[in-house]
Image 1: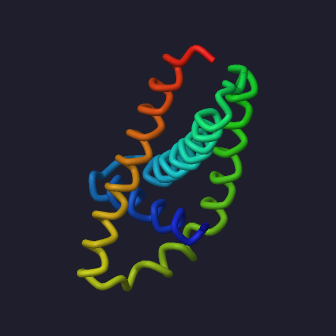
Image 2: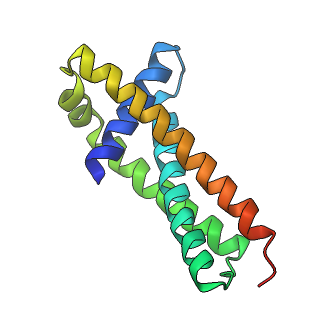
Length: 126
C-alpha cells in the first residue's frame, strides 16, 4: 500500500516541482495525507450505509486524526524522499503517462466518492 502512496507522492512532487513551486515536498505530503483521509472517510461512510447508523465524529477528534496522518506522512517523506525519487526516476515514458492518468483518476474518484457519499448520507434521517 505504501508503494502506491509513494508513487502518488512522487507524481504530486514532480507536478509541483515542474510548476516551480517553492514547497513541492510539502504539497506532495499534503495530497497523500488528504487521499488517505478520504479513503478512511469513504470506508466510514460505506459502513454507515450498511448499518444505517451515523458515526458521531467530533471535529476535534477528526482534526487530531488528520494531523496524525499528516505528521506520519511528513516524517516518512522527509526521511525517505531521496530513496523514493531514485526508485521512480527511471520510469519509462509510457509507464509515466499511464501513471499520470491513474494518479489523476484516483484523486478525482476519491474526492467525488468522499464528497458524494457525505452529501448522500448527510440527507438521511436514521
